[in-house]
Length: 337
Image (tube, rainbow, N blue to C red; front, side, top):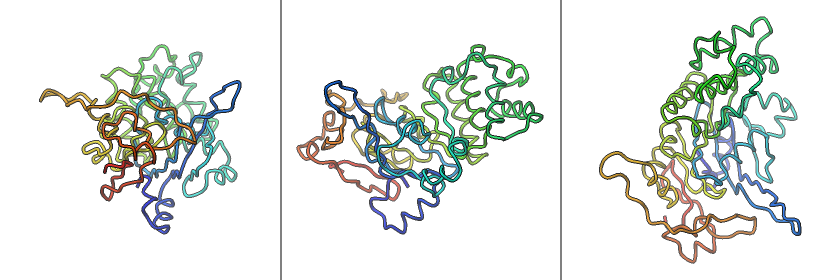
């Protein structure tokens, strides 16, 4: 259950952590702002906690600057967290890496990036992109690599496989390139895939195909997905759980049906109101203040959404809301729930 540790006994907490393939507690990430005359930081991720279970998809939803991708980059070891705890398969991440090495963690936790062209080397063939991780991680010997590459290309729907393998990234469409990125990720038998807005740069006509492919991999191979998106509608379609982030904070989380169908936090309601709806004149636009998105610091106080929230009061400006449990699988941070 997402971030429900605030309201559960320690014994339940231990059970949840042990059953999760990835478990995050109170994650914080600060970045230096780089001023020449003074040292100042911004807090990109603040007190984020969640569990990701085997064969499950967790959608992290929010607009640009909400901290979604920063969290994924911490889990992929591109960034190091400022504070907080990450556990992988029940072990502290630092302990797992000390025992098994960075390479083994990288094998088990793969990442798919937003720009499929930027994530592929333009001077190498598709065959090279998929064969290389197989060899680096010892998933096939040299004699077996060609058959394994062709098998992976067929699995992600890139046929004819021999012809596709000899092509270069610029010879494929955006959707095809993203399928190559997915094939490369699953080549090493990962436990987790961090998918950072994998469909946002693709044509609308091919987005559903990529989501369906990831869903098949989740169901058939038992891969856990952390799906980062700004589109709350696709979160419900693909993921069992959804967490909504704003300015580095998780403001609402739980099972996807509850969060996307009956959102309770004003920001979640704003995201849902922006989704086009056919018939009945579309969705009614919400009245929202035109405030600036704040730059959060370690010293910041109050609710991060206070500047844009139509319900905001003086209490919202002064204190961070506690977690409210709305149902067994639905939580939010708001003073007015």
